[in-house]
Image (spheres, helix red, strand yellow):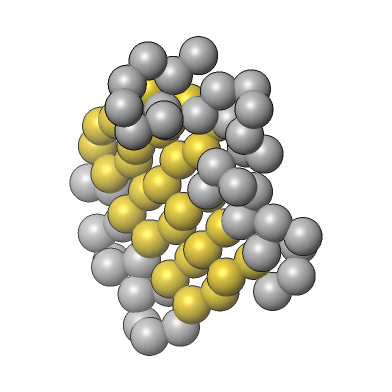
Length: 73
């Protein structure tokens, strides 16, 4: 169960050997996606997997894709 005022608890974060950053959060069993995370890459791209089940990807070159919780892009 998340134990802070923001509704989530941190599972972990860091930077891998390629210099890409990630952060994982636990929103608890009542969320659509309890194990949400995001990462950002050295090429400027980034990806979010949100607690409501939606995702967002930016390729770092002006292109992006949002997928709603229903799966519709």
